[in-house]
Length: 126
Image (tube, rainbow, N blue to C red; front, side, top):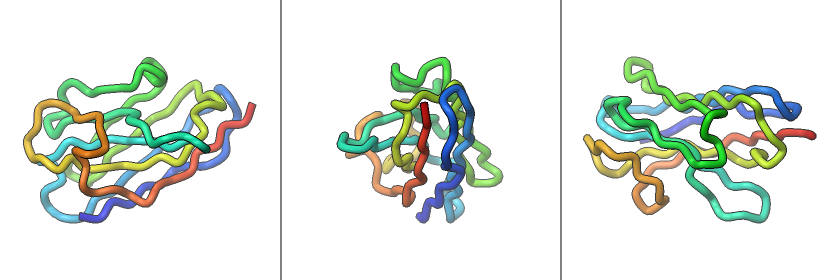
């Protein structure tokens, strides 16, 4: 599967951005999808994930209450709405697909993801 992420850009602190990730293929609706990010000089980290059934989205503590993940299984797209952005949210954001179909729990570690998008850069200025 190919994942194409978009929507990054430069925004002032307190602003909003909406990231999108479009997946190829016909099996999008079977897999959990997640967003990770890699900040300058740091390891890649889990940000948010959503199961195939859209139940129980999962968020990193650092983004809870500010970010919302959603998906459109008709359009093979997963979204990340980012509000109240902070300079520490500056990073390259990656979408990823769970390697296991029909999982009811969002995995939060990279080793559960086989397919990754190319990344989209989000820069938040202070």
